[in-house]
Amino acid sequence: MWMVCIVAALISLKLFNMQPKADQIEQLEYDIWSIRYSSSREIQQVKIIQFIDHYFYIAVHFENKKIKPSIIWQDQVSKNQWKSLKNRCKFG
Image 1 (cartoon, rainbow, N blue to C red):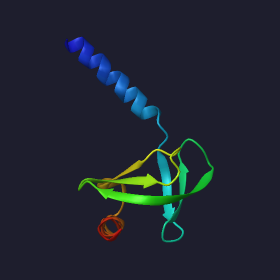
Image 2 (image 1 turned 180 degrees about the vertical axis):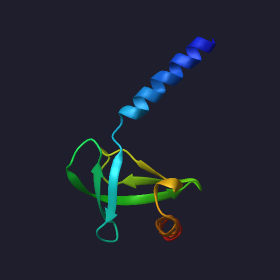
Image 3 (image 1 turned 90 degrees about the vertical axis):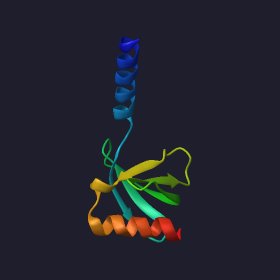
């Protein structure tokens, strides 16, 4: 049973690490953002429809369903940026 759990955890970790990760995200207008993934140099313009605050991280959902939701952890941004994101979550 332990071996099955360890193999399942390793497979999950491998699949998680294969997903593209946002390298840079910046606000252009109120709901229009630019995002660049570490796997490519192309900068995409996306519309964010929802921020969900989960206390330690914030989930970001995009209008385009082809783009998977992103997670922003508290230690990935500065303290001022984190406060700004928290306020954005509260006020929509």
